[in-house]
Each structure stands twice: as structure tokens, then as C-alpha cells.
Image 1 (cartoon, one colour):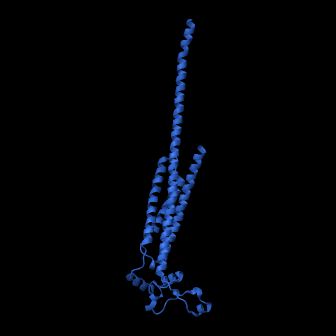
Image 2 (cartoon, helix red, strand yellow):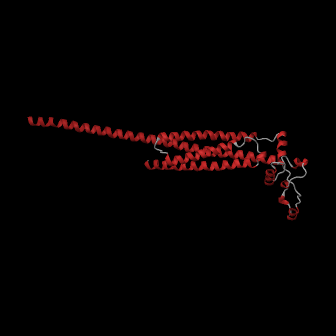
Length: 266
């Protein structure tokens, strides 16, 4: 029983280390999601980075709590363990809300309104041209809804050209024979939905891991409490047996002289 209890305790220490590592991993992934959402900011819907930013903060806090538990948590101290469980439960609730938030935003992502369409495309050919060139060449798209967006412009930018099927001589001559037909808006929206779905899955994995650790901690506290109660009962039993033995000894000592006197009188 003692060895099993010690192994359980070592498993909890390993779980605290794993909890810190999971927090660090979650922070890295959340940072990458934020970078992806900002990479094509002109067409990224509003208020989609909040869930990733909150998950990043929770990952940093979880990493810190895991490190603190590994370094300073005394698993034999019931008060410390309960505070640790409450802190993890709060993080679980927040991350559950983050996952729900990401799913709601996933369903709310929609195409641009006509007013924003004109405003964004006006910047696409002026101030944000370099950003649009990068986006169109990387995503192999053209304009917001397609090449027709450039009908009021002198020429379609080279970034709209599909260079995968061009011959080398055409590239050197600067001639584009194939233009990407799909608009960048739908590509970015699908990408955003995919990121929000991954945020939900990341939050779900973190919540499941933390709930498992909380369950293990609860079992440990219960087992430790039963063990301490068993020890106390054994000590009380030993002390009661010792007291009974001492009383018997005293009674024997008190009764012996009477027998000796009666034997002398006879």
C-alpha cells in the first residue's frame, strides 16, 4: 500500500510537469494562430483573434502553475492541493468558454459588406499593395472576389498570375498566360474558419488534460485522508491497548501484597 501510494505521488509530480509542458505548447500554438490571423489582416474578419489571445494567456498561466506545482507544491498538504485544484478549475472554465467562443465565431464568419468591399479594395491598390501582392501570390488568388475587381485599374498585378504552369521563357519575358480565378476573400474566410476550429480543438485537449489531473488530485487527497485516518485509528488503538496493559499491571501490583499477607497469617 505504501509503495503504491508513493508511486501515485510521483505520478502526480510527473502530471504537474506535463501540465506545464502542455501550457507552453498551447501558448506556442495560440501565438501561431494569432500570427496566421494577422498575416492577411485586410480580409480577416473582425474580432476573431480574441479566443486565440485568451488561449495564449491561459497557456502562459498554466505553464506557470505547472512549474509552481513541480517546485513548491506539497502533495501531503491538503490546503495547498485544494488551492491548486481551485486554480485549475478556474482555468478549465475559462478555456471551456474560449472553445465555445471560437465555435460561435466560426459560425458567424461571413463575407464582406459592399461598403467595406470598396474601402478595402481602394487600399489594396494604394497603401496596402505590398500586403495584397504577398497575399495573392501566397494564396494563389486575385482581388477580393476575383480578377474582375481590377476592371477599373490599368492592369492586373503580377501577383495574380498563376506561375505554376508557366514556361521558363514566358517568365523571363514577363508574360502571364494564366490568372488565378478565385478571389482572396473566400480563401481567407476558409482559412479563418479552420484556425477557429483548431483553437476549439486545442482548448478541448487542454480542458480534458486538466480535468484528468484534477480527478487524480481529488483521488489522491481522498486516499491520503483515508490513510491518515487509518494511521490515527491505529495509534489510538495502540494507545488504548497500552493503557489497558498498564492498568492490568497496576492492578496486579496492588493485589499481590494482599495475597502475601493472607499467606503469612495462615
